[in-house]
Amino acid sequence: MDEIRIKKAARGDKSYISKTLIYFLLAVWATVVLFPFYWMVLSSFKSYGEYASEWVPKFYAASPTFENYGTAFSAVPLGGYFANTLIFTLATTAIMLVVTILAAFAFARLEFKGKNLVFTVFLALMMIPSELVVITNFVTVTDMDLRNTFMGLILPSVTSVFYIYLLKENFAQIPDELYYAAKADGTGDFKYLCKVMIPICKPTIVTVTILKVIECWNSFVWPRLVTDDRAYYLVSNGIQEIRENGFGRENIPAMMAAICVISLPLIVLFLVFRNKIMAGVSRGGLKG
Image 1 (tube, rainbow, N blue to C red):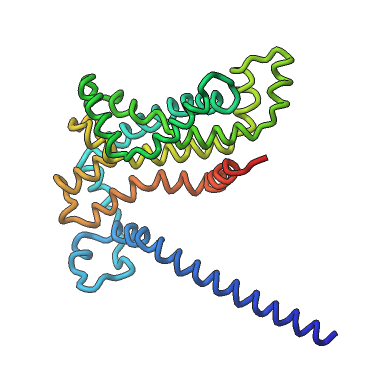
Image 2 (image 1 turned 45 degrees about the vertical axis):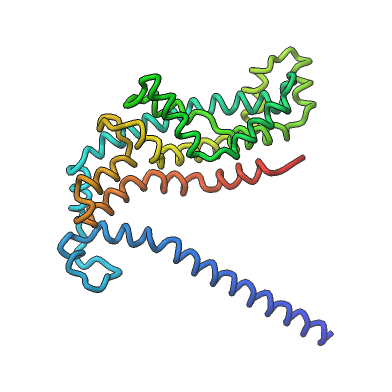
């Protein structure tokens, strides 16, 4: 009995040491990842004079101030950029959801000639470098005279092969018996999609929605290409404008305040829905 207790105690000690090491490494990694955010927020509360006078950076603000946040909104029309980004994000996400759900349903449940070939071609599109797609879209939008319009901003972003694939795999997990039973009751495909498949796959759809919102909010290259009118600038364009024509090269604290304001909606969104994101992504990879 004593020998068994000793072995159990040894295993317990090893388990405790292993967990301690894992938590220590996670803490170190979290510190490395979160430190830039801490420095960004800290710098935004320092006055320009305090920041410029620091020969050695300080990890605290001696005299915290909100002046930089006022400067961020007064130097450039940041409020207008927020409104443009909100319109772009909501419209793009809504259209993308309709396209993605219908396409995923067709690939997962409907039977039509060449379905597997078409889906293979869809997956092959993921292998094309994004730079080539950007060039093609830019030429198309320019030829259609859609530059400096919301339509030109939105249209190239309303489809996503990855999201279609993710949702298609999720739809495919729903038992066929439910579909056949619904058809026997006279339920049409669209009604079955709305009443059965979408509610069952809600976690994945929520995940796709949140990821698309984050993607749209962080869009930089495409809005930068198709807009040179400030009336259609997004927040990503606003950051670049602050850096080039505003105060960004000199007044770093005000620049950090602008970045904090722009980043806050995404941080709140992720913190609120982080569990749903993880649940939706993990569910999309399960079978059976």
